[in-house]
Image (cartoon, rainbow, N blue to C red):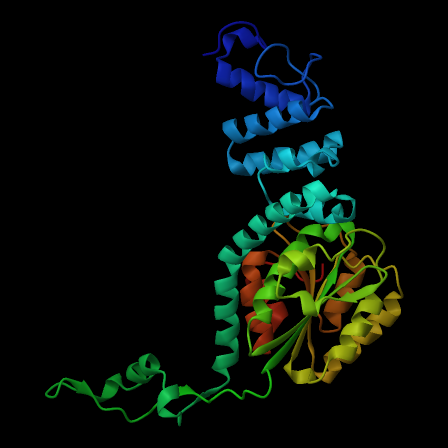
Length: 377
């Protein structure tokens, strides 16, 4: 039971007062002073770096990581603190997350030299976290999808899958000899070293609203690029188209090569992607965009129709992020889905299964619907 009048900070302990100050410093609540660990309640974080640095320290101390990330994001958006985040002492105090990386990438050309290495360290920490969460799952899903179509009943001895072979021959188990008589071998045909088995083309909208999608695309694209069985291209676009495939070895460098913001010409990007197609039936093209087309929507639809009819598997992701489905052009999403290019939002943890489905040339729209993801609407 709380004692005293509502809003009486005297009834709170020191830790609760600092929590209250951190919250009211961001969201308001009366008073004129900046948060300082006690005293009057505030309605702002003030303009000085020491005050913001102390506030960042308080929110990391008194709130869980998930809450800290939301508060930091709100502070940047509500209070216009982007420039303060370009100071190295502040960047070293923040809780890194994908949203912060998007902010830093969007400000990359304005980051002063003394802050650049700190900014890169923050971005690399988030990139490595994403890789730990998703890279192994992505690689396993892709290998599984490609290898499934390459199984053979006459493998070389070095290519025998002994676990599957034993399971298939259990019916030939000889109790007296306590052994399995192998009548059927299961294995994989040897992979050609001359060419990749599948081509994956990622076309990523780098308009400001797609910041998180750009971050995840860079990391997942770099993971895919490490696979010899998949030839991966990554292209970012706004009104211009930039092929960043050569930078896939380092997703941090790749991210700082993007330029978040600006207009959008999806048709131009898809035209470039179409020029990269060498083997249509062995190609998956993933367009990641909210579909607010600044170019020619009718021409975009024509190109997508041509790609699908040629055998390319085309998937449209309205977002590749944990933030849910963004605002997007519902009419264009529905039309592309009708053309055979299903359009839906996807969280990063589902992307490995999505890509595996596409690589197996299975019905991506059916996979999405079975996963509870609405398509094209």
